Image (cartoon, rainbow, N blue to C red):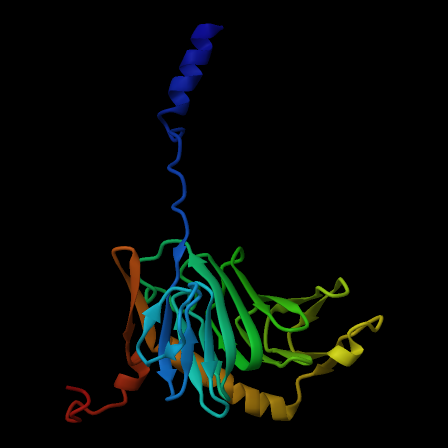
Length: 265
């Protein structure tokens, strides 16, 4: 009997039975400030840190920073998981957490998220339009607002929030809406706009649901298109433990330029 057990143990250690190496731990993902207007600031989370200007081209990890963009001034982030985050009218966004499984080059398959990620943001004021790649099923994207926690399983949506209301317009996928104050929970489906107001927060069913209107298709669709355009033009590659962005032109764009055009050279 002992001999049989030893043989089985030996087989388990050889033909396909060797203990698999543990999965690499998630690493910090990169926020790339692709478009920043004058007056936009960032407050690091470190104790005693001071507000400073945020500049276009900065690349950093999320650690609880608070980003403020003045009203009317657009802000665009591209993330190393393939998400484009567009604040078309300014706003206040907190970057709580962004990690992802190790990735070496995000340009290899641009239709899909390069690796599993965890993203936690908080939108206190403003509008954020998100256009991303097809997410890994086990990835998570949570957006906190003053009234609700939003857990997205989507690659295309717009959230409008302030102290007394939040509106979620979902162009694909689903979003789980949770109201911490009351314990209310429901799932909003693709093609819907869900609105939650403070005055209606304690109603039996506080969400106001409606189909996406033609105006929303046009106006919000333009914001999503801007986020998508930014995302497809930025890729990340690993340099040591850091993901470094590079801005690129899509092949379809360069194919339309004459070889005699100075931009081609």
